[in-house]
Image (cartoon, rainbow, N blue to C red; front, side, top):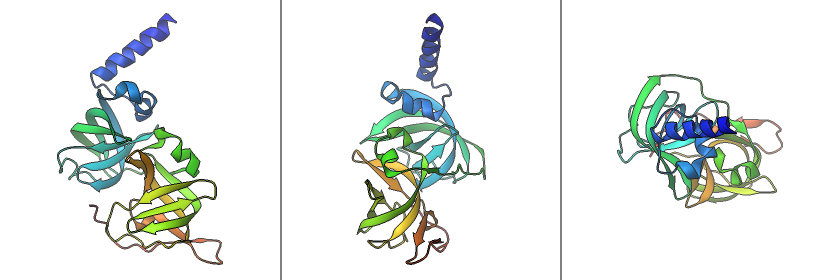
Length: 219
C-alpha cells in the first residue's frame, strides 16, 4: 500500500514538471491532467494544418495544437517528435497545447491502424488521436465535406479536413482509415487523404482503392 502511494506520488510529481509520460497515461488520467504540463514523444500520423497535427506512440495517440499557426510547418507525417505542452479539453477534443517541439527523426514507419467497430470509437474517448480502420461500413449521409457512415448497428460522423476530397455517395460501402477526433463534443473520424478510403464496387468482393491524386494540401 505504501509503495503504491509513493509510486502514484512520484508519477504525479513527474507530470507536474512536464517529465516524460506515455500517451495512454494522459488518457487514463485526463481529468486530473487538464491544465498540467506534460512531455510526450510520438510519430506524426496526420498533419491537418501547420498548427494541428496528430502523434501516436506505442500506447495511444493524441492531437497537438498550437496558437502559433506555423508551429508545425517543418513537421511531416512520419517524423518522430518530442513536445512539451499543456493538456487541454477543446470542446470535447483531447489535445496538448504545444509550447516546445523537437524533431527527433524522419521517415519513421506509421503504426498500423487499429481495426475497430464504430461502437469502440463512440464510447471510448481514449481512442481520440488513434489511427483506426473501419471495415465495410455504409455511407448513409453526405453533405459537402461531412459524411455519416454506419455498420448497421451504430453510425458516426466523418469529415474531410483537406481539399480535393473524394465525392462519396449514399450507399457506398467503404473501408475507412482515419484519425479519431471530436467536434463540439461529438466524436468524429477524419481521413487524412483519399488514399485512406477503399470503395467496394457493386458485385465485387474486393475493395478498389481510390486513385492517388498526388499531394494533398491540408487546410
